[in-house]
Amino acid sequence: MSEYLISIKIEKLEEGGYLATSDTLQGLIAQGRSIAETIELAQDVARKLIESYIEHGDPLPYEIEPSQTVMQDVKIPISVTA
Image (cartoon, rainbow, N blue to C red; front, side, top):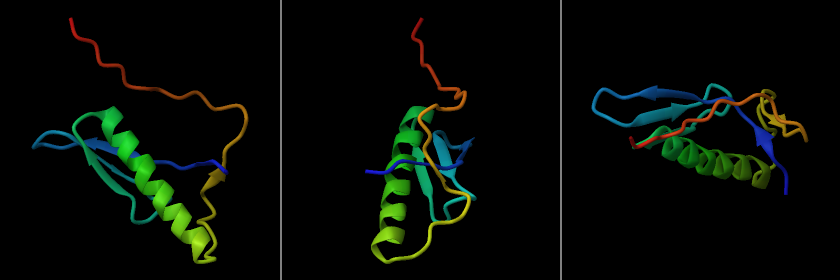
């Protein structure tokens, strides 16, 4: 099993929820109710797209990086109910 790192953009939608897209992995579009859900859905879509590239023998976009043992500094959303 291999892991890859891709960049995604998450934007808040006027009608509610969030939308994730990627300039790195064309075709990645995911929409969720929260940032966390949107990221999870984006991971699933990205996995399926990358598996399709590999299955068909197509080269991955050069911007897709193999995962390293040491991760970079990552900000994560935390929902708090007060």
